[in-house]
Length: 550
Image (tube, rainbow, N blue to C red):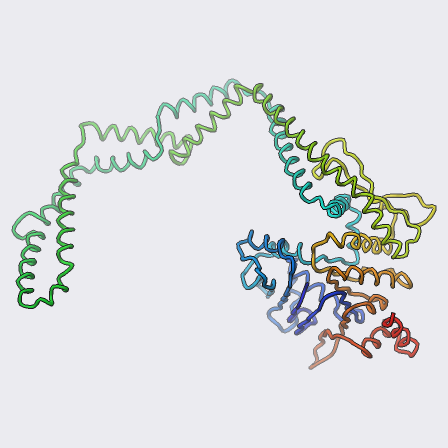
């Protein structure tokens, strides 16, 4: 659940620390008191775009922090690990967002992250419904997602999606080759020439660096030998060479050690340095002696470099790129010369992939056909609780002529709210007030399958009143047995059923308006419900008390 929500300097909220608690949490207050700020804060936590105009006047930044305690963090852990963070391992998930005039920073458990990652996490944390979110029920794609969730068909959906993408990929490759014009003779000749041009050079990976090094030595061989011999001469030849001087120093050290043996440690590194210089002299002597080039070798190296540079200008930035160009050209030539054979291979691949689509699609369709009437029956039962005593609700599956991205059929929720009315697609029949109740019935039917911890209903009870308002409240309370629910509402019937009741209000302090959030209990809660019922008369208070007792 969402255990804690902190808001600082967001719109009218100066400093708010809200501990929610489990179950059904209602938020009420006068219109304009600031209830929408809570929804705005949650949207920021979920990675929505930040409006810097929300920063409280006089402040440089605003911040929102949410602490989630999750009993089943597997989906959240997957997102964390995929984005390079540690899994929760029993810890709370802390999301913090800071918005300034020129900055927008977000953190998960103290580590900086992107807003895109917050959106990924949000899909597993909060299910937020506003006054118009019931319109999502108009989408056939969304309806199909709901049916698949009810059927527990996630793995079947995944398997079908993989086979469908493989089939489409093979189909596109086949169609591109089938619809392309036959390659011209000139293009085939050009490819053959390019391949032969590269093959004739017999390039070897890494040879360019080796040849350039050899060329530098050949072009400067006299100077290279001169430098090598100069080093050898100064190290070893002549009475005052470095090694001669070192031998004299060594003799003097040994003699000095006879007088003071403690100096042995001081001189301990000298012998190894002397040996290293001797080895260096031997190596340089051999190197200088080995610098020999055949007559004409420099010309040969220059010609080879010219060949490589010419090929690089034609086909790539280096030898590796030239060889890769050759392989690509050879592949294209093979496809052109064997177009018919390639088409046959692709056609066979398309048919094989289509069979896999059909197999995966039939398994998914079977799960959908089994669950569709059960989901319809479940939703219809919840609709009865919400005041649709004679409503008809069906989940119809309509076969597709061609496999679609989400299966072999599409779905349509069909609804008739009143006796005697024909069944029509949900998007063509229900009013906004009816759609709010249908959405609630669907969420109730899917409550067991829905792994999202927190549901937020932001005034979805608009256009609902009377006895129906009480039914809506009871249905939310029922969902709250499995989920934490925040209900921002104007309905006293709903607010009275909440496990905890909070009131948003505005107050003037130091010539500044600010919104506050306070939990109401006992007499204070009666006062708030009475206000929502239309006043603070004795009859309104009596009505409020009766709602609480109920």
